[in-house]
Length: 258
View 1 (tube, rainbow, N blue to C red):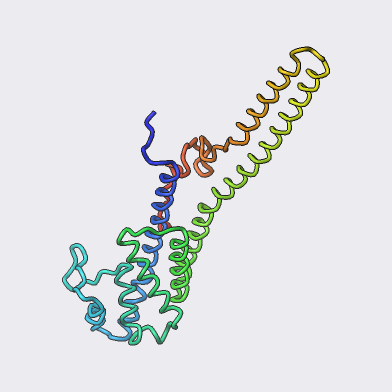
View 2 (cartoon, rainbow, N blue to C red):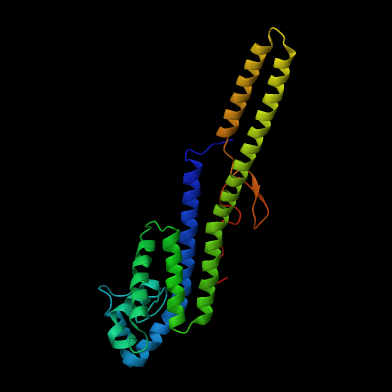
């Protein structure tokens, strides 16, 4: 059996971080598919045929062409849609959205850049990104896409807290089992020692002392024992036997667009 050089807790944390990045990536894809057409329609309504020129003015460098597309094709992604919204806010979007929605755009730009540059996103960051995306989608009338993000938020919450709740339950059960076992040890020790003392044999006291020491050692070992929280267990989703915190078979969530 090959043992990894990384501690199990580090492996679990890395797996969890990677999974959270997957959630953010998929949510940004949903945002792009909904926000791109919205931004384009608002630009067209304001600038007419000059909308591409005004959109490109929001960038320090010219936008890249679509693969195999014409030179005037404009490619929407999360970065371009959010950047154009921010830069063209006063001219285009302030008539339809408020200061709160503008703060969402600013926040999502920052989180998107952190995600694109492979910076670490913890659970709080990932949940906030999803929540902000859901709110922005609702604000522009994309209720169906907002519902997808809401469902993804609930899934992220479930993954984050289900194992924590399970760990707490196992820990509490282990504490109860410890004290129950210690109580049995104490009762057995008292019964054996009392029987030896009542026998009044010459070596009874020595044997009784030895028995007491043995039970003290057993009690100490039992109190030091910690439960194996992430040992062999059945995955709650695919029902296969796994040995890590994240299931290697279904740990990668499918895209919400599938």
